[in-house]
Image 1 (cartoon, rainbow, N blue to C red):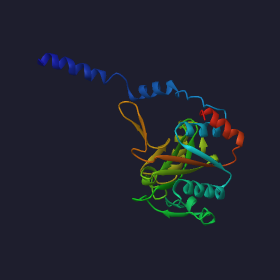
Image 2: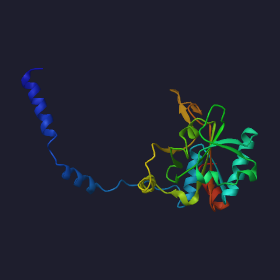
Image 3: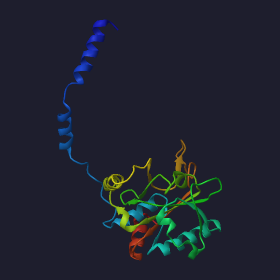
Image 4: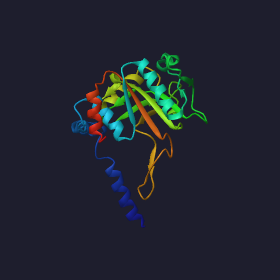
Length: 232
């Protein structure tokens, strides 16, 4: 490349970087407005959330309160492992639950070799995607979400939001008042991957099963409608 051609190219690059001021770029971005959000698959936030969890290959159980959630955890563990053992983060909400009533033996800490089931208490649930949101720390170690065979998640009906944008608003509201977490996890089902032939393999890089326990008043008809929306 000759000096004249190099100078010509570099000159064009320099001029391209000086076309608009920061204020102009900011103004143009604001004029675009927010991106349109997709419609939920149901007018009901809870029905949309449940249906999308099922579409994501998760399972769902709806219970009325925390005592019922404890029993649901116990029943799930016994059905899956003939055991009532699991690992849970040092979350004050989990610590306050009546585990002894159902004979559940949670170990509070991080998942280790041999821990088959992990329990998390979600910060949020997102109806648009069927995702739950946690952030890392002692209350919810990332290993409890990612390294166990079965991941059980408790989420409250009051903590469901419709869209990803609203989820981020809630997250920013929370972390603006407290120390920022090192990681924010959006979990949308059990671990899955596919090879070059498109064969889906569950649990290759994380939990094989993902069970969501939704605390709140959800009618049987709403649960049935959600299952229908998910094709079940």
